[in-house]
Amino acid sequence: MLPVCCGEILKRFAEAIHGLAMDFAQKLAEGMGLVGYQFKGWPSQFRINKYSFTPETVGTSGVQIHTDSGFLTILQDDEDVGGLEVMDKFGRFIPVDPLRGSFVINLGDIAQAWSNGRLRSVQHRVQCKEAKVRISIASFLLGPKDTAVEASAELISSENPRKYVPFTFEEYRKLRIATKLQAGQALELLRVKS
Ligand SMILES: O=C(O)CCC(=O)C(=O)O
Ligand SMILES: [Fe+2]
Image (tube, helix red, strand yellow):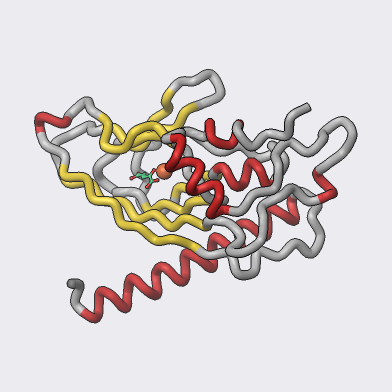
């Protein structure tokens, strides 16, 4: 149980990060020409990750390769202990070294479906580099609560037809769990068949 003051600080931090995520999402939508698009009611999930790395775990994965299932993630990474790696388009892992005073923002599978594939979710993992405790704080902007995720009409054309069938975040979450496909492959199961 956290002392009351820490709980209050975390609550305020989580609320502020959720606000930042909503703002970021709004700007993404505007940047893609979606006038008046609203992310109202989209929830965030807040998680603190603690990795108790030991000499024996050096060289192994703290978190296996995955994509985040939601729309976007704002990550306050450990400022001293590295380990986060993202995959580039050639399939190579690129380390994201700690940078004090900065957040890492990455897109998840919902962003890919919502944008009809114009935005891409990023595969990433956490490697154990040294025998230290590593802490990261992740805030996941998930997806619409009750309505389906589907690309807006502005993003669909004859050259760029709808790529994914509409689905709810909850359906997608369950699909990822049922199929154990954690690195974006579950989205392929929701592709519109041509
Ligand atoms: O701990 C990190 O740096 C990343 C954690 C992560 O990828 C996640 O929680 O989804
Ligand atoms: Fe992640």
